[in-house]
Length: 204
Image 1 (spheres, rainbow, N blue to C red):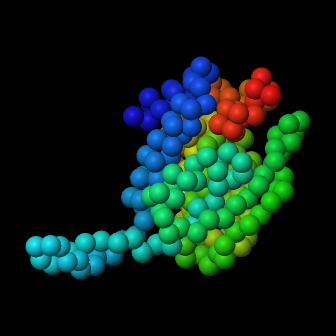
Image 2 (image 1 turned 45 degrees about the vertical axis):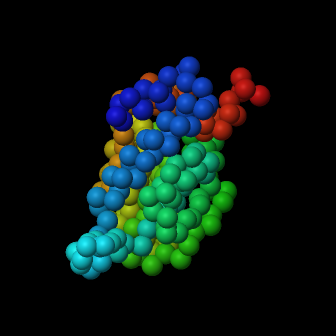
């Protein structure tokens, strides 16, 4: 399923409606994967026919989309984690240096006990992911309780994040081999945010 969805995101002929629907479907699959790594506890429940044993999640989940592209994944993750707290970090990439700088930050209280899920559709150089991880850990987050969810990564960027944060769980639907001279993932899918939000130059 994920290969079919990734193909639809890659296809330059996918219209905006298809692109957004595909984003929702792939985000749902990834959110389901996150549930496998959350702690549960057994609870009793009464069915119409009698008592039974059930389970509930015990982890406090915090979703942190990286602006702006991460917002595209947020509403689907909230369907899976309706009680999650949400924080935002805004990072702007310098087109000449490809270095990300922070322009916005609004996070809930971080205690180190919560499971934090960073949402960013693409890991290219890894700069945005690392800037986000640095900020979260500076505020008290535990790397072993952080998951980074992306649709596509470049091998170089993903390995960079793994080297600096080996305890962070990285969930990527598909890994591509390289970056081009402009640090775009190849073959990738172009600029995810521009395609999802309709802000590509040819659409202006």
